[in-house]
Image (cartoon, rainbow, N blue to C red; front, top):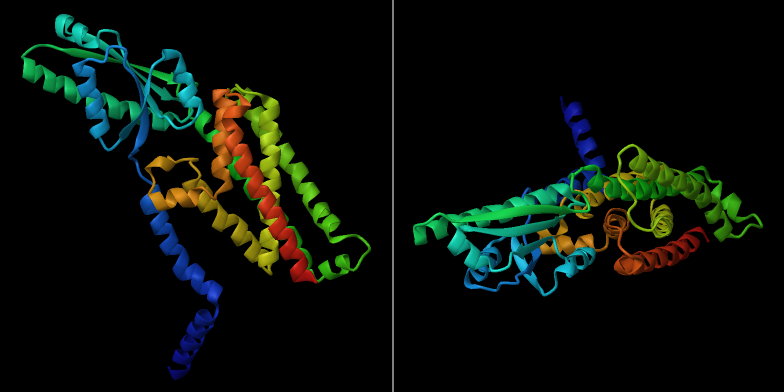
Length: 368
């Protein structure tokens, strides 16, 4: 029995001495429970709302105050022109627009009937449905309160309109997310594994001793995966358009250029990972497991970023897939002009440049 206890003690010591194993065993559960606890929520809070109110009467003011008082909405903008509704959605900041009818209070008090339009961004159908349901619940509560106060029958008729995706097809939402996840995982994982494999086998030193410059060795490793990523991109786009009926509403050339930029960024991540880890297993874990969870939870692929804790929103800002998915939704689904995705282009370009410089510098330092 003493020998058995000795073996148990030996195994515990092996685990405790391996810092990476301890990090996986004790660190990942903590990270997962925090991410799932704060990122995954069925509620959507603090959604920015724009209002077009041509009547500006007492009742519309009360409705706006009721909307503002809820935890779900924040009135961010008062529109003066009905034609500007499309523009506020293209900026990507507004999730819902309330449009009151002319002479709203007069129609409601004299005829007992008034109309209000709820316009949501249908590129994320689940979120759009949830937002309109929240707004309809607030309007229904206000209508009931008004009927009790005035002892009469009043009917506020909400008309729901889903921009860009009137059928609320789920494919409109997950296609951009799948594009972002597939491209970054394939490029980063396969590039890092390919380079680490050379280091593990001891052939990297042989390659570096050849007349070929190190930069060309890295490019030679990256080009095949860049080509395969282009094939994957074409496959996703073709399947989306011809099988899932998801149109490319915007400029296809800008969408392809954006995707090329994102592929370069993903290859740079793979190169950086290869300079940090020493084994193929570690490279696979770093580029696969460690990257996949933040992409799914914090990129806006499934869960709205505005509903997350403020700290997680800051963390999501450094996840490249967030900006790529957001830009793809604008270009592919909304069909916006390129100036509306200039911010995403600049952020992804800056990230790519930083990762390329850092990874190449780190690579040369480690292999000299």
